[in-house]
Amino acid sequence: TSLIDAFMKCGDVTSAKALFDRSTKKTTPVYGAMMKGFIINNLSQEAIDLFNEIKDPNETIITLFFNACAQLGTEKELILLKSISSKISNCFYSNPYVVTSLIDAFMKCGDVTSAKALFDRSTKKALSMYGAMMTG
Image (cartoon, rainbow, N blue to C red; front, top):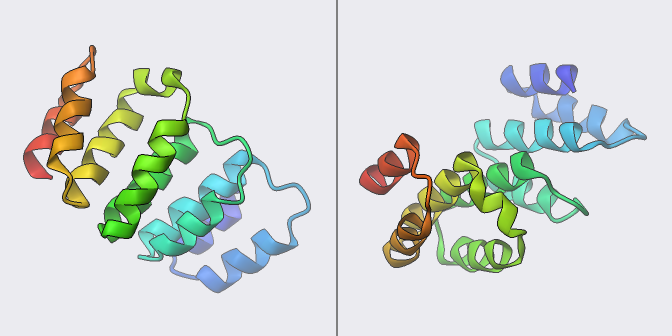
């Protein structure tokens, strides 16, 4: 995981992908490192494609998926956001990072109504949620 992260931070996506592909045990942190690396290297579609391979995503993976959708910000990603956010467990919505990233993604995909509805439904509003609503 650390080596993949280092390659990605240096912009060496090819080496990171080669290491990932050779890995026999692809754990959630390994997937997370790859997704984060794709996002920081402006390869969000690759992060979304990788997300689709993960059988049981955790909160970090869900947050990275929402961040990738936000980076692309198109109607296609908005449809994906709505589909995935309707399928994830309600327990994810108690995590302010997940909620903030989803609000941000809705805003960047042009769906202010869904972002506001999610913000209004949130019982524990974090400062980051207000920021996502204001800067979206």
